[in-house]
Image (cartoon, rainbow, N blue to C red):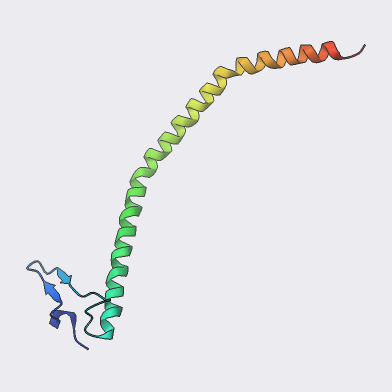
Length: 102
């Protein structure tokens, strides 16, 4: 099995970063290269997921504040509209009282 560092499709930069130019659909040297390529892609997927989780962790407190603010606003609106409901209930009660036979 050929090692990636010995393959002409792998370039190692001055900082030690490896760049792979192999494509599993066109220019794979050995069958093991596909397994390595899958591991590299899986590692990239996990890194992206961890980055997303960090962002969610940063946004969670802000999201909680927004939910609390919206809940307060909705409760304030309900409180301010309660007089309308109280008035309508009083009118309905009076109408129901008028309709009741004695």
